[in-house]
Image (cartoon, rainbow, N blue to C red; front, side):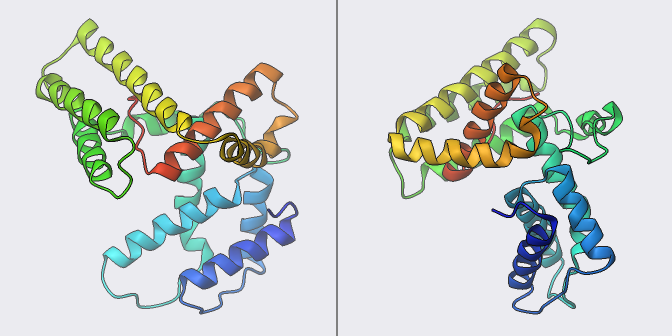
Length: 239
């Protein structure tokens, strides 16, 4: 993994070249400053790649590509994915020298854009049903039970209020943990160690200023996120 701004920028440049079907768009000048700032913020390379992927998916959805994509076009998506990653793993600010840490930039302003609970349940059912129909059938029984429970919750989610709604949200959180634990139990020690090392790499820019207990919580959350990513499992929790 790249650890210096120049190495980080070369990795981004190479990835952007692949996404542009081999067309080289150099990361120099203002582009270099932009991407170097991502490195200073502590944005893991893989998270930056996911942001670039998100831009390309939206770009291709509009029809045939007309021109190579410059890295500047991907900035909003990269920062959005980074914000999602920080909230998922419990990191509250950027890396050293990032200038991040103001509560205004801590993702709170994105909460209002989340989907409704019924829409969340609808998407979960669709994704888990697709996952259950895949080649890996090891989690069939677990996924089937989750889909059945989510389907029952969806039927009442539009009218549920107050304590009953909060109870459903708590239940979704517990179901989320159960599915991640089921994924974890399927892996051997070597695979889990690899995920732990990958999580350490992602959290490296933030570790020095995190209390030990906070780091351990973030590390476990990061491993859980990697488990989900590997299995294609959506986040069941509704926050």
